[in-house]
Image (cartoon, rainbow, N blue to C red; front, side, top):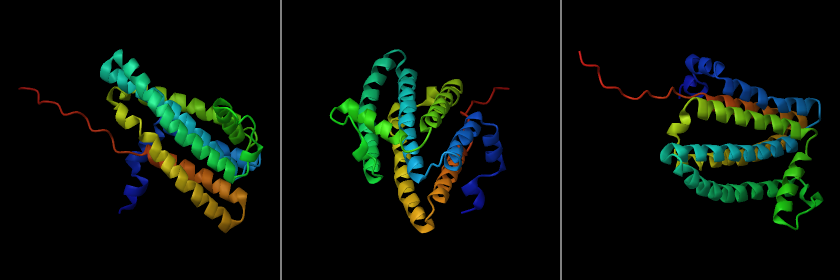
Length: 232
């Protein structure tokens, strides 16, 4: 496979450089470097930050599902989208929070959580427990959230891409990220075992995450719809 197919050619990288979503996404992805170098974050804090980011991704997906249904069914799409969103919240929510609970158990945080006797309390405890793994993580997560709102408005709405969205496809897109996230957790754990330095392992995770974001932003230009030749 040619190197250009892996890292993208000049045309692709120049397109990324002109894409405000890609550039701001890179800036947001590098924010955790400050957490590692200044606030003393370790790989556990980063893993839990990226788990919390999965929830933000789910929230953006809800907006995309509604937009896709409106594009296909106009105002009736609001009703249809509400049903699809309810299914997505139940399925993706259980999957995500189950994964978060396992991570907190592995990292030894679960035992310290309070309010687990009710469903709502358990969800709040999971989120607060994840936030507790790194100093000032709520501020970084808030900036992540602002980026997801910006990406939704710019990438999906202002570009008109929402008119081309398919609800059935959009609903399952976040699961691919979750699969990558699972693999990343095991890779980071192995790297930490090999390096024996949590700080270096954490920085590697941040850089890998930023590189993945940039690589995801590189794609072939969308094909233009075919047009009939203009009669002479």
